[in-house]
Image (cartoon, rainbow, N blue to C red):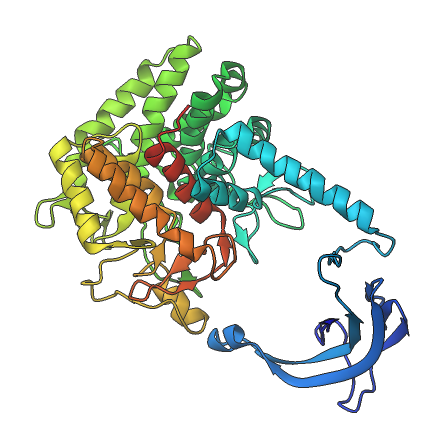
Length: 518
C-alpha cells in the first residue's frame, strides 16, 4: 500500500485561529485537492491515485536547523488529506512532478518522454566530457544543477549555491572551468564570460547581479582577476582566439584601471602591488558594520592573481598581435617586490595581509590562512621552488582537513572550530577556522606541483578527493556543501549545495588526478 501525505505550511496559507477558521478554501474530489488563499495564491495536488480528504493541523511544527541558527523555527502545517493506492509487484509505477505552472494534465507517457530526454542530455554531457570514471560522473551530475538562465535577463549564468545565493562574479569565474569547460559546454561558457565582460565598469567585473533586476553590484577586488584567469582556461580548452579578440578591450580595461586606480580603493602602489579597501576579497563577512576578517591593504592572493593576470594578458595579447611590453613591465615589478613584502621567515610561509595602521606604520599579518596557496597553484607564480614547497607544507600542517582547508590555523587565538549557532556566531566562524572545500582545487594543484607530479602525490590527491564520495550521500544528496567545521567530525554547514565546492573538486579530480586536460 502506498500512501502520500502532503503538508502545506502556514507561511503560504495563513489562518486566523487554531480552530480551523482558515483564510483559504479547499476544493477536493477523488483525484486531488486545490487550496486557494484569500490573496490569490493557489496550491494544487492531483493524481490518478485515489485522494481522501482528511484535513489535519500540526501545531508548533519545529525546524531543527532554523532553531540552531537562531531563526524563527516554529509554524503550523496543514495536511489536507492523502493519496492512496495498492502496489502490485513488478507492474506498479508512480511519479511526482512539481511546477509553478499548471501541470494537472501531465500524463505518464509525457513524463517518460521528459525523463528519457533528460537521461539522453546527461549521457551526452558525459560523452562530451570523455568521462567514464564513476566518481567523476557523480560530480558531473552535481555540476549540472548550477547552470541556469537568469530570470530577469534571460542570460546563461551560474547559481553560487542552493538555497539562498544568486549569481556571483567571483564564484562564477572560479566555478566556470569545472561547471562548463570540463563538460565541453563551451557555448554557455562563452555566453557567461561575454555577459560579465559587457557589465565590466572601471575595470571591475560585477560581484553579483541582483535577482530581481537592477544595476549589478561591483564591490569585489578579485572577480576581475579571476575573469582573466578563467578566460585563459576557456582559450586553453577551445583555442577560440576570435572570442578573446571580442573581449580584449575588457581585459585591457581591467589591467589599466587596476594600474591607475579605480573604485573601492583598488589600485597599484609604487611597488607594483595591488591594494584594496575593506571587505573586497572573498573573506568578506561582516556583522553590522564590523568586518570579521579585516583585509584592507595588500592581500597575498590578490597580488598572486594580479601577477597571473598580467602574464596571461601578455600571452594572449601576443597571440592577437598586440604590444604587450607594458604588461611584462608590470609583471616584472610585481615579481621583484612580492617576496620581499609577503614572505614571513618565522613561519616559512606568506603573510596574509600587509597594511598601514592609523599612524602610517606598515603592519604584516602573520595569521596562517589558505589564501597563500594561490601563490603556488596559479599558472604563473613568482616564488622559488623551495618557498613554494614550504607554503604547501605549512598549509598541509595547519589547515588541511578531509573536506577542505581551514580558513585560519587552529593555533590562532581567533580560531573558531565549529560553524554553528545564530547568524553572529556563524559569521564569526565563517572565515576564522571554517573549512571550505573549494580551496582543495588549488591545494591539489599546488601539492602535485611541489611534489614533482610524482606517482605518490597522484595517489595522495586521489584519496583526498575521493573522500567526498561518502559526503555525496549526506547533507545535500548528490552534491557538496558550502562549508564544514574546522574541528572533527567536520560536520557540513552553510548551503547544502555550493557551486565552487562541486566545481573545484570536479576540476581537480579530472585535470589533476585523472589527467584529462585540454
